Image 1 (cartoon, one colour):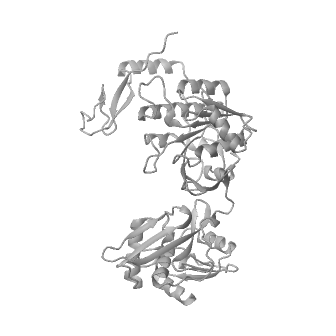
Image 2 (cartoon, helix red, strand yellow):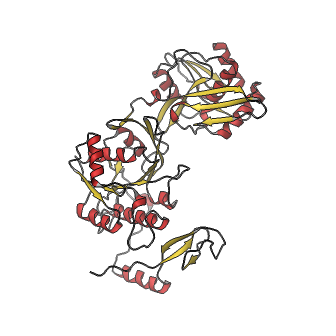
Image 3 (tube, rainbow, N blue to C red):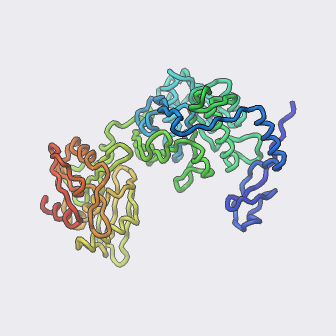
Length: 476
């Protein structure tokens, strides 16, 4: 049987778009180094126009509709059987939706997806495509996790064309590709994992997922077309923690999830950074056990240390992760630093820490110029919102003065360069969550002061950082 001739390829520059018939270290058009990637060569303009005309001759033109006339319906979601994963996805998987999940090696991506596939296989046909393990290895992991795996279809394959043929034959409702960097198309000559292969394989799989199959004319939500296939792509990450491969990969998919956590810790976070079907910055919290990943019902317990008595340099913050208020302990250590004091933060922005120390000195008279300052968010969580400012400053001030904050104390609020304490979004939800978990004293921005008293919670509303420090001293 004759083999198909590989498609002709050229090398295109990522910087200027110029093309070269062969790979060069330096682009001959713009002079940039190491920017040439192999891509499929396009047909000449005349031939391409003729091909498009012939393809569209028998096809009916798509009707143009006014936006107000288009019927909008909510996407039907399918639960993955993992409540925390459903939360990050916005309620579950969507037919025709494409999800990209990345994380460090060994963090638990394959384990979580295998658990979800096993739970969904009782209701829907599912397919697990593994390019990094054999079928026997997948079966061994399933038995170790205590999964039956009776209805989970497994394909150990890395050639794109064979995977597409299997999808057409099996007609699954959910397909997991583990991982996209291992796939290759026989129409391209570059190696698996190259920019061209990753981009082409992802585009082909997304097209199939949206259309509901190789022969599907519609797409997810299309008029009269198949409902589409839910597709989950597992991606590698770089040393910097970003998804490996071309940036266009993140634009092709509907949802991008990051698996975070320390491999030496039993807790994992799944964070949504893009979601066309739900909220971004939502997180799911899991605990790694002998039986796989289990959702954590009360995540705040992870991020709070269990001190017998209040200790200097510790302040509890109520932060928001998507729709969920979380209580996180902020720890600060201030020590003699000599001529070149260090500023180090884990889980918080280091540049913002330097700015807050300047505000603390200028407006509250608390100087740390000759001190080392270390700040840490307990539990490995990363806090990006500025509402952590007030808790960070109170923790630093407590460590410097060797005075512990009162038991059951929480704080939140953004601190400006002028020393003002700005309100945090959804302050009432933060206060109610703190009261529910037994906290009794809060220092918050004036604009977040509750209109009605919250049972069991004494709230001190402040306008400036000086007032916040005075309020803490009065409580000691």
